[in-house]
Amino acid sequence: MTHKRFTYLLIFIISILLNLSILLAVSRAESDFSWHAGGYVTGDFASGAGYSPGVGILAEAQGRWKFLELKVGASTAWQKKKRASFGYTWSGSAQLRGFFYKDFYAVGAYGIAGYESRFDSGAIWRKHGDNVGFGLGWETDYIDLNLITYLKENSSPNKVAYTSLSVRYRMWEYIWAMGSVKRMTYDQMTSTGMERWDALNMTVGIGVRW
Image (cartoon, rainbow, N blue to C red; front, top):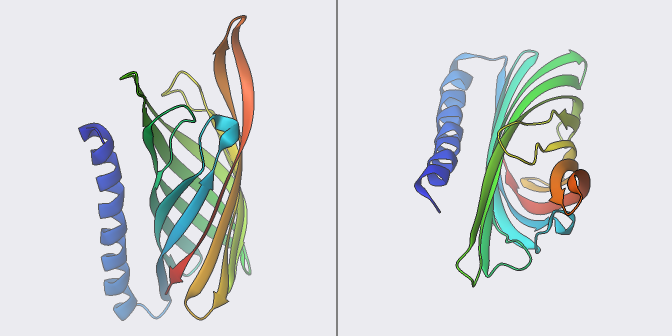
């Protein structure tokens, strides 16, 4: 992993740990405050975007005070481009949620993600981009479901945009399952020029949340 990509991932991991420590401190003083944290082992599938299936880890933490909630997450997966010999993907996210009616919320989100794949020829493919998104969700004690549309980014030549449907479901006590489906669009250079392509990505996982 290059120094720059490692720095991005480290920042998000540190942010989760800091967020969790703040949540614990505030929860002792605020009866209206609640928090959750968890981790998942994931299976990642993105053949439409040119990746082989991968296995990864996802860490999340969130805290709610009255009608406002902050959620942060970071993930990485051993996942490579199909013709590569080695590769990985990484991502980080932050969501600010506002509950407007019972368990329903509006959300503003920020996501950053990237990949690196190495080939036997010595070539290295490496890209990253970040997006801002908006959406709606529903959260109870046993489920967290949301639909978020992320606007087109300008930090990479592909100008990726995507819509994500994500769910976290409580199976038993501290055992939770997760899943997400992303429909992404991106610019791709072809023999006839730049074209707008689309792909469907999916992640499933199981882990603990407390």
